[in-house]
Figure 1: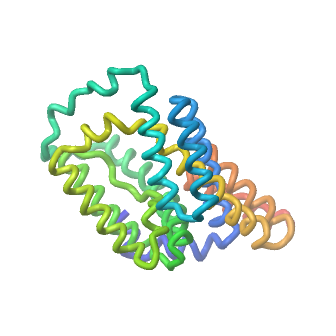
Figure 2 (figure 1 turned 90 degrees about the vertical axis):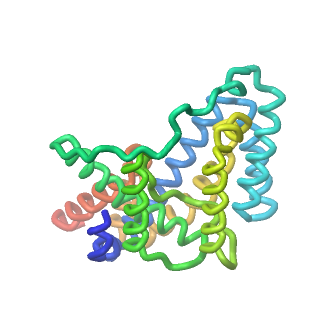
Length: 275
């Protein structure tokens, strides 16, 4: 991914696939986020309902994702603390082995196959999530630089035994006039929390469903409508409708890369058939 970003391949892909497919892919991500939010809320109903309600009300009142995520997470976590009967979740022991561990480098066909699969997923995710953050922040983004930075972070995390570090849709993008510095400060605060090993203690009081309201607002209200409209109107005739719709649906049920690929194939076939 670092090499792909260094050679500017992702920006070239965006220019090549055009606005119909790129907007359709981002609209599909909106549907995907909405589905994830719904599943989270169903898994833990009371905090999920509170998160949905407070998230929607807050966003409609403020049009600000930062207030939306803050208020919905805090209120749903408070409700979960007083209503949850699963006492075991509040008595979980922190991870015993939470130190940096340098892993031995391994190279075999399964590693290469897995890496290539992650490259395919990351191409679509970097383009989709990077552009969604860009739309929220109201700023241009270079997804090649984004790919290079995230790949370096991913390599460092994996090498020392951590999980993958990939691009995500961040509420700090809606913190004008300095969304970039908001993200930097947020990650610095997170670094302090992690170094002090406070995350397991905080996590005991924050249910997964507390983020459902924010994800629903982000997917169903912020991401889906505008990108869906752009995908279905950016091209000419049935090419725009079919290509954008197929990209949107396939992205929602699989992943952004397959959604983008399906849109390219459909547009190619329609040109051959004369549509």
